[in-house]
Amino acid sequence: MPDVQSASFKERRRWRKDDSEVWLKNESRAKGDTWVLFFRKTRKSDGKRVETKIPIGLVKDLPQIRDAWAEVERLHPHINEINSRRGITLADLAQHYAEHELVDHTESINAKAHTTVLSYERIIRNRLLPKWANRIAPGIEPLEVEQWLKNLKRERKFANPTLDKTRRVMSLIYKHGQRYGLIPRNQESNPMRFVRCRTTSGYKAMILTPEQAYAILLNLQEPERTLTLLASGTGLRISECLGLHGRTSVSRTQ
Image (cartoon, rainbow, N blue to C red; front, side):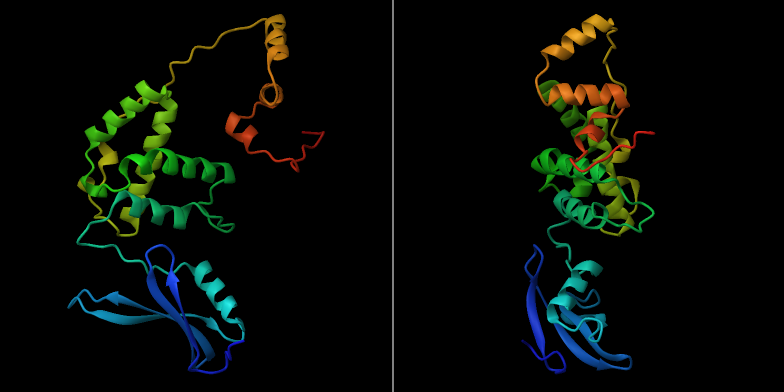
């Protein structure tokens, strides 16, 4: 067990996915012994690599090294740097967006529902990254995105609302990048401002008699039969139905 009272104690780690080296060290400060996170970053004035540090918390509140590392993860300090020579890619923006927006913030005024988080993660993982991950984000052209959406509709039979949701998630990633200063805050750096996409569905409702509806229900297998009964009896959307768990309870008065 390391001696956390020793001011010389420190532990090094590799930071997340970019292999940056960071280390924790406890220092004596006015408020008491404090865990401090150290890392190196490039100084903009002369391009030199310099040591930078961020106070994490008091040793009396975080007595073990593992407690201090857990606090580092909770605080999520912005350490990873974008390679300016390479340029920021859509994968860079998407990762930063996921780390800051698609997490459980119980006290956040913009907290997203769990089903929304899962839906956005699927769109990013299964649609956006396979196509755009390595492209320089500001260099993606609006017409490229529009053609890609048309291809998804033709080849994968995506409905207009599904395509529009894909466009909106991609737009949220760009807006997030501009908000954090990862890309310039101008129109040219956000191609999604110029991407057009139909939002209305071509679906036409078919009216069934009670006898026809019952006959269809009898021919459905599980779990489709239960999902159909649940959606028709409660008015829940399919994403809400799929988000329910076994422990979910419904009051008889509702």
